[in-house]
Amino acid sequence: MAQMKPNSLAVFNSNDIYPVSADSTLPFAQHRDIFYLSGVDQEESILVMFPDCPKEKHREILFLKETNEHIAIWEGEKLTKEAALKTSGIKTVYWLQDMEKVMFELMTQCDTVYINTNEHYRANVETETREDRFSKWLKNKYPAHSVAKSNPILQRLRSVKDPIELELMQTACNITEKGFRRVLDFVKPGVWEYNIEAEYMHEFLNHRSKGFAYTPIIAAGNNANVLHYIENNQQCRAGDLILMDVGAEYANYSSDMTRTIPVSGKFTDRQKAVYNAVNRVKDEATKMLVPGTFWEQYHVEVGKLMTSELLGLGLIDKADVQNENPDWPAYKKYFMHGTSHHIGLDTHDYGLLHEPMQANMVFTVEPGIYIPDEGFGIRLEDDVVIQESGEPFNLMGNIPIEAEEIEELMN
Image (cartoon, rainbow, N blue to C red; front, side, top):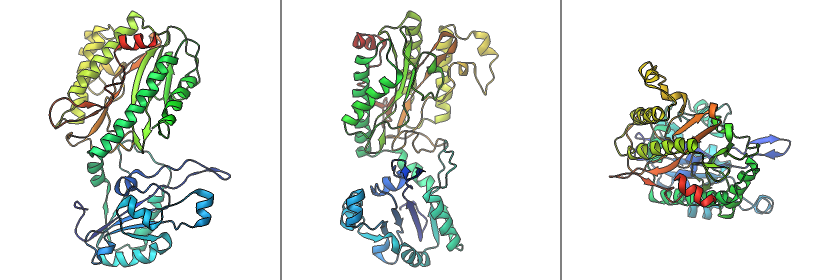
């Protein structure tokens, strides 16, 4: 509210429940913005914020789907007005059927309306969302109002985490650790990638996670060289490595871990050399995540670290580096993705990448080396919190990562 223009109003909608076909639907997942701002985690909810409203009771409003006994029996309880106040701290709650009438009064009193468009740098949305339909309706019905964007305000707010959020993310990481330790005990030649996925899922659900924060990658052997391999349907063979990019969600917050382990419980000398190179890049890259760092320059510096490790491994030579294309440096042949992204309510969370890093932002650190010719790929990833001073705090500091420790636990 403090960052909105004078005499303006902002609206946030829940996500739809998406149909599959016939009467099937996908599990409901709340739009992160209305959840972040209100704690409301159900469909067909609208949050309106109007800090300069002449009527004090209309400065914060929730519109909710009216609940009744029939709905309670068939679908479970929805928020009552009392429960909504307890969840959100918002006193003024109307049922959804009154929305157009109340909105008419509010729109006569404000000059600017903030609509919530998705401007995340990775967004690629082909579906018209409930938020989109609402914005279309609002602009059509009230064409004389100025329109502003909520997204830049939200990107700044959501990228800097509150202590409560950090606690929830730590819990998500702790659940991920339980899954990983279970898997280290379980993996041996002959298991299938989906068996490993099931072991994680068992541990996650058992600790009050709803499951994976994103589609898990369990990639044995050469599958690890497909960056978004999600089939998870191949057998793990002796001598292979398995790259596992998995993370538990907890209370709608994400964790995002990658570990690469030997199916047989022991790395070959070559696998270990590449593994340790990736781990060194991760450790050095992590130290650069301090307030004031710019995301783009950080990636250039990580590229230099990776170049030096690839030279040491004999994967590239000095001539490759001297003749490299500055837009696609030599190291990109073996490490083609970014090293870090914001993480929070979304796995690829909000954050304006052209602005400097700040304390209490949370980033992944995930370098990798992918060598299809040698039949393996290695990526290692932790989630770290930027500190006011000194090195960032690793939320995954307790999850085994050193090659020797992995071997010891597997044996």
